Length: 302
Image 1 (cartoon, rainbow, N blue to C red):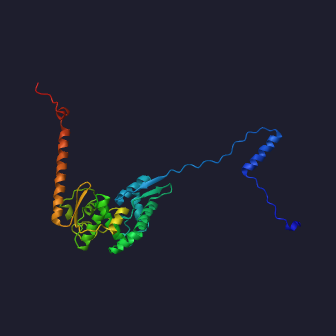
Image 2 (cartoon, rainbow, N blue to C red; image 1 turned 30 degrees about the horizontal axis):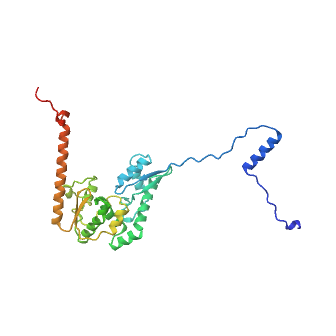
Image 3 (tube, helix red, strand yellow; image 1 turned 90 degrees about the vertical axis):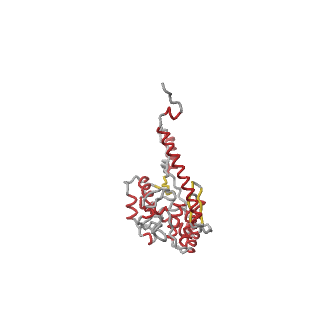
């Protein structure tokens, strides 16, 4: 073929390993003994996977403290970051991320900041609230996403078990529909910054927008950060006419339609609590006695 029509020749390029082989062959041919180190690629350092776990029902201060610990920051750093970071919160939140620090496991790397973690939590909450079943369910009850998060936060705090969440949500919706005050102890304890099962008469008289004994409607903000089960219950509550409930003992929550029925359950709760307090007091007294007296082997008169 004429040279003008010959295809271009492929130039052979030796790899680094190929050049080393040629070099060794030349050395062997010349009779020169040379020690050549074996070339190996340096293994990558294994990545240490760290995760920050936010449980369902944590309040914002608990999340802030966990972020500070995980990132080894001075106390208060995450809370300051929440105020300084433009988080994708609804306007109703007024910059307060309570209710939107979604419970989940979040990856943490050397580049993670408090602001980036908080933003990831809020974005995750927004995705769950925008899910079709949650968004449509909220609209069916006339709730904005922020109100949905608020109802879910009450459900998260009040329900003793996941199975109770739908019924607790139904009580909330039934009371709102009847323009009854919610009278939820959990909102009082949020205002008082505590976690307890004990609510006193004076607690119900505090002057706070979170006092749902004195004020009608939902509290002004969520009272914790609810998980997916509480969100689902908030928008799809269990059908029923209940207006009251009380957890008589762990795993035993009683739901009532009438106040009279509710009073009977409250009386049983008080009896059980009184018996437990008496048993604890007796145990404390027994624990304070001398060992010989407790064992029944106290010596008699000498």
